[in-house]
Amino acid sequence: MSAVRLLLLFLLCSHFVSLCHGACSEVDSDTEAVAGKGFKLGCISCKMRPEVEASATVNWYFKAKGEAEFAHIYNYDEEGPHIVDERFEERVDWNGSKRSQDIQDASIYLFNVTFNDSGTYSCHFHRLLTYEFYEYQTVVSKLVHLKVVAKATRGTASIVSEVMMYVSIIGLQAWLYIEMVYCFRKISAAGEEALRESANAEYLAIASESKDNCAGVQVAE
Image (cartoon, rainbow, N blue to C red):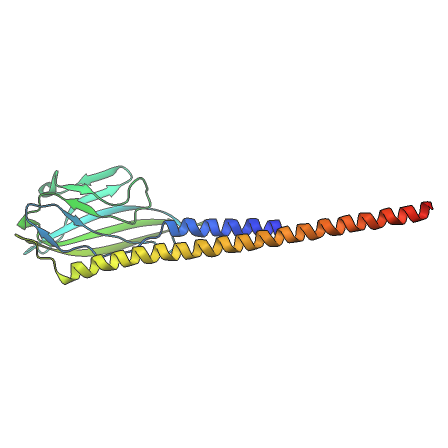
């Protein structure tokens, strides 16, 4: 019975570690770009339950200053990236989740930023969650208000955002390490208990066999 408990505990810890390994942290995008430089438009949407299988497609929209409506500029699906708006032709590259249909990072990279790129960007996740007996669709949207300047002036919000990102990463790694140590200690303790039980069982078996032998000798006499 101890061996079965040990195996179940090991499988549970392995599953937990795999979930932690894929941990996701939502970080806001920077909002100030420098003209003539490249800029990453960040957009992250984490699943509430990482163990649920999912697939997603992403659409980006842009509304320039003075415009009333958003224009569809970019799409990413199972067939890859598609630039929809000619204003961004050969200037946008996918910078999000790769080699997976379960997209949680939908960031894109904008090359050769111009002052005309100032405005509001909106990214939309169209996510399909697959449960055992049914499927569920969700739509998540996020906004990035981009300001293009001639010279970099790093603001407080950008610094705080970057600090929080590193704090989140370090916190997740520390949590994972603590849980791994806890799991391995539990496995080690369960293993030692199993060895003790096995040794006790072996001792009792030897004692019983010796007693039976002694009884046999007495009968023979």
